[in-house]
Image (cartoon, rainbow, N blue to C red; front, side, top):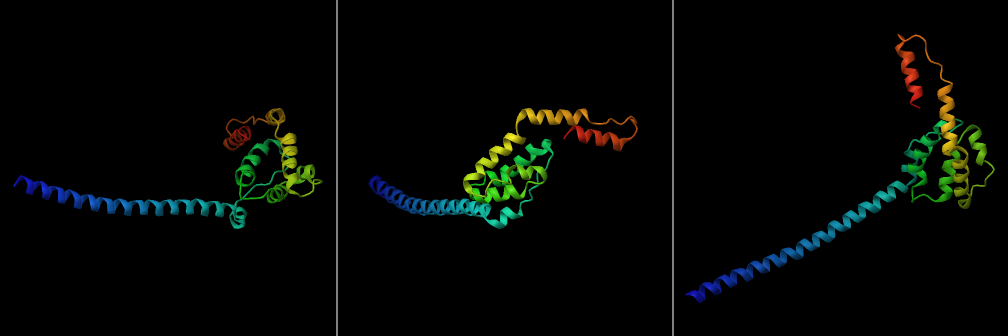
Length: 167
């Protein structure tokens, strides 16, 4: 009787083991499918970020003569264009030139639009407008040239002064 119970238990265990192995193989197949979907999703996102429609849909603000705004400009340009691995340097250079206005545009206007010159143009702009000393000086001058409002009851003037000091 004991042998029969043992035999029966062994048969049940073997059946359960067979079912578990079948499920394991099915789960491994699902894991591979999920991995493929995740990888495809990553590739799709890279493709979307690199697509012309995506890049053109990003609103980038132009940079003009206000040195105090260079850091803000560079952060948004850098995130959207400069660090975008899906864009070639010639495309980045074209975007950069299109976003510069006034005298800032003339700083790199003489540089031919080639992939090799993109890094040079970036370096020139950063040297001219992105140096810490220049930015500190520009912000200091802006603060010193603020005209305080003498009327402390004028809420709009106080808000304007507050906003200007936070730039």
